[in-house]
Image: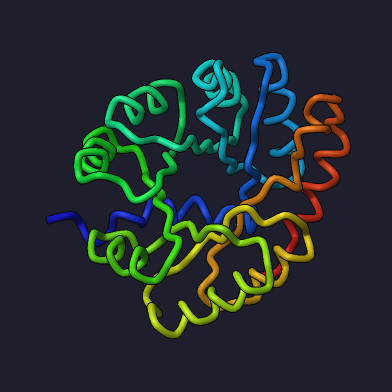
Length: 213
């Protein structure tokens, strides 16, 4: 039996800003400057790809920047949860987690954000205590209509549309009542990270941080 408030820690983090940047970093040296740029722009919560070769070191570097709340994913096994938690992550991102992964995250106090791709997923996850879920993919007008339908069929679940590719699309998703916040990579695109254009990233973050919801 899983606790009914499994998603409460994630909901608290989502209240900090309307947008969670999705980040892929190739070099550890970019970790702290990027984290500072995002926090300065008003986006303290972000998701770091755990697939990068130096992902744990990158998370550890970012976690040293005051104000950051770092998500890491995808995590699959309990050992993944322990590793990202030890590195400094505040939450893990997963597909539909196994019971072992969910239990491991609860044991080490790592918030877990699972992903639904259809209504059946959302209902299943809600039974397991996840009232906040990622919704993927959220890249088209069709996805927006699907979100609206979920608001009718699963009214007790709040979603984080993921893969949102622009400020304009983020604004549209945030206008839907069952959207808690959105995530996407347009705030810190790979080309700006490679170019170390931190001022530009801060500028994009500031625009995202004031989106209404």
